[in-house]
Image (cartoon, rainbow, N blue to C red):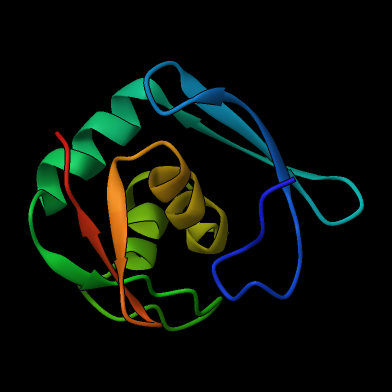
Length: 104
């Protein structure tokens, strides 16, 4: 099971960035990110260092969390999507709070 961006808890997911993911976290929470949404996210942020933006209420503008809340779900899922992008080699961590999308 992968760890969240903070490393404080774990989550699970099926699928891939290429095919879309179903993310499971907490006791019974789920989120879906489609392949098209991942493509749009990667295209939007390609080669930029951006904040992950894990805040549930105030994700910084132009952060991964801000984009996900505007385009995928109002639920804060950046803590899960960022590690998935890194695990699947679409992004690299840039310090503790930032990420660089490396592949479009």
